[in-house]
Length: 224
Ligand SMILES: [Mn+2]
Image (cartoon, rainbow, N blue to C red; front, top):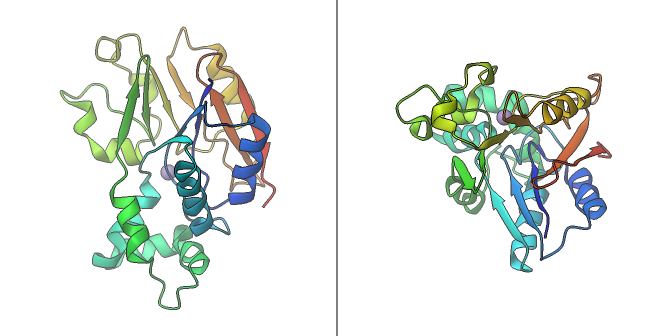
């Protein structure tokens, strides 16, 4: 019954489906999706629909909120957020809905609004971007969980205890992800975002699945 973590699908439905096919993902397995389902890629609507299809057919899929879902949620009421969201991939999301006024249908905004900021399992803590573990209540700091970069060097291990943090958000080349898995004894943090959308970046342009028990990594190149 393997458990997997995948992050930052960014509208790349075909690549996501191919990765699950290669994992032989089944109802006996469990999948943690760490946010940024939408934006940049060609089929954000299709990614959300597919996740819901998996759930409705008895698959165990747990979804987190990413900064791109947050931007989509804030866009209708905040002009500046709307401008930057459309620029950083929101336009493609609206196009996947065939929306002439560049909006996301309410049912999909409701889906995003229901996404949690973090998830916990025995031994693991999942967030989209990062955690400021030096705060008094790190799991109330939503800004870090959605947006943090270069945060892991300053880890408060007393707070973390023996857990491993798995996250995404910052596109990272395959060899660096491999190295982080080999270095877990020194730093119990794994970024599984292999920059699926960043196809021109060395070592990126891939979707990465981490198998949580064995720490096996499976990389799928962007086929969209
Ligand atoms: Mn992100």
